[in-house]
Length: 84
Picture 1 (cartoon, rainbow, N blue to C red):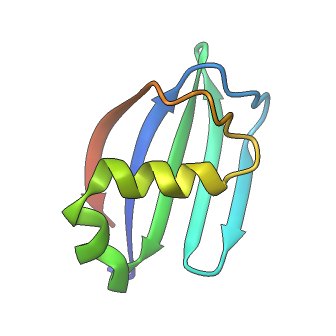
Picture 2: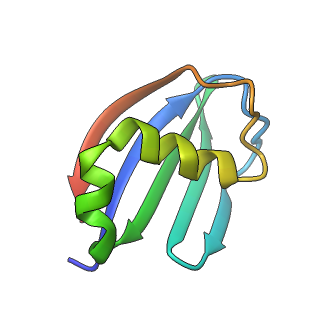
């Protein structure tokens, strides 16, 4: 495995089509689905221990870097954790 990733479903995110966000050490994809937005965030495998230690906080910090993620929308549901 070369990455670790987590995803959640968000409300009130202004995404009408699939969108990608790529930065050094961070990859995100947002896809609208049934009134919510699926937001997956991936980090390099070398970040797995740090991410796993505090999944919610690290995920939220990364989500805050994604331009179309509204700062006021922090209602999220962590659906799974995975190592891909």
